Amino acid sequence: MRIIMKITVAAILILSCVKIMASTNDQEIKTLYHTLDSLIGCQDSLIAEKKAHILAIHDGVKGMELTSEQEIALNNRLYDEYLAFNFDSAHHYIKKNIEILQTLDDANLKAGSLIRMAHILAVSGLFEKADAMLGEISLKQINTEKKVEYYNQKAELFLYRSEMAQYSPYFKEYIDSAQYYRQLILQIAPKESFEYITNMANYTSEKGNEDQAIRIFEDYLPSIKQGDRRYSIITSTLAYFYSRKQQSALQEKNVLLSAISDLRGTILENNSFRELSAILMERGDYSKAYFYLSQASDDAQLYGSRLRSVQAARLSPLITKAYDAERAQAQRRTNNLLIILSLIALLLVGSVIYTLSLMRKRRLINEKIKRMNAELSQHNDEIRVMNAQMKEANRIKDEYIGRFLELCSNLIHRGEERLKKMNRLARERKLEELYAELKSNAPINGGIRMFHQNFDTAFLNIYPNFVSEVNSLMTEGNGFDVGEETNKLTTELRVLALIRLGIQDNQKIADILRSSITTIYTYRSKLKSRARNKDSFEDDIRQIATY
Image 1 (cartoon, helix red, strand yellow):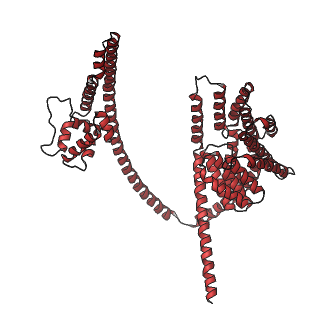
Image 2 (image 1 turned 180 degrees about the vertical axis):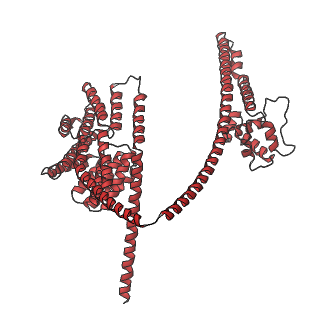
Image 3 (image 1 turned 120 degrees about the horizontal axis):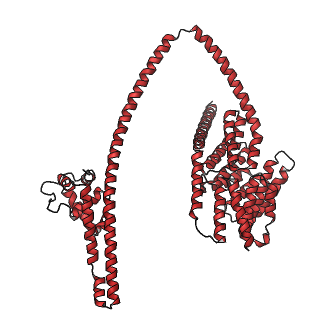
């Protein structure tokens, strides 16, 4: 009897854990869908940011005369930016490199450009032209790095061909060819490289060891940021691996991660939305499947990819047909429900209930309006404070710009006069006078006095009552004398003036006033000790108004 009880309890615990895990997974999937839909809503702004970034690269070299090597590097950078964003532009820039390289004798640079051209042709479905590009490369003349790129592109080309040849006799042949080139990559590529990791995982998967392939990618994925094209590729491939293991929840999760990464990185040459629509179609969620397939089709058209457009077009009739059937069925259900509700409405005397409902809604709306008015009043107060701050900032800006432009001009003039004087002394070989002039600190001291004079005048023009306001914060007998020189501040008052202007750091204050940091620290400590409220003294200083 006890054994039966233990088995029952254990079974209940196992079922509870399974339910909790399923609930957690469902919540994670919902969160990913919410993120994805939010990013789709922002896609126009993301694309605009991408275009602005590329335009900045263009503008960065305007008017510059570039060498052939620099132009090749620039075109490669623009190709990389357009690679998954716009087919025509990527094709344009790599074609320019191939034309430039006709005049250069660099096998590795030429191979790199041909491989890039082969890739961009392959993703557009121009397999024969891509293969012809790769055929122009002599493996004997290129280094190991370019060989890895070459083999990787050959494997990728056969993989694209296999995608178009599914359910045909040629599918297995293309996969075997891809496996052959993956083997070559694994023999020469650095083990920590992206090419080695991806080809090892795909090679292992095709050999039937899905678990090992998944472990390879799961270990590598944290090292890549979302929005990186490599992140999108790995999560999309992980989804494929999980589909082969019939783990649909993990498949869907990774497809969503790939789609989110595509949107964050403005990657328009993608598989993720088409794969996601296929998953949703199998589940029977035709409206969402139709929505994401439309996104896949739009991205393919924006990118200009013939391959992705064809793949989306293959799936489109199936989803459209199912979606139309679902809408028709929903419409029939809606019509039947309306008829039933109409009959019920004729039998019910609902005018009183309806009136009460309207009155309740009106009361709720009035309460909501009151809350909104209160919030608007609060916002208006905040706006008034911000306007006052902006007005004060504008006044400070106007005063200081004029003052310090004049100060800079005077200092430059003095520097020019002193330089002329020293040149004259040197020309006349009056070395002792020249040495005395060089040794003199008078120009620096004069400049400091001029700076203090301008600073004091400008500050007191903005804060005419500053000294009296400071005195009101000090204890009796510890205020500052308002002497005859109403436009001059003491060093202590200058420290407080800089604090009022928002400069808090002792080192910065010391640099401005040409004092030691210890002296500034001592001034601040003494000033606080003389204040009425020591804890809030500096905050009170910052609250002194301009007028």
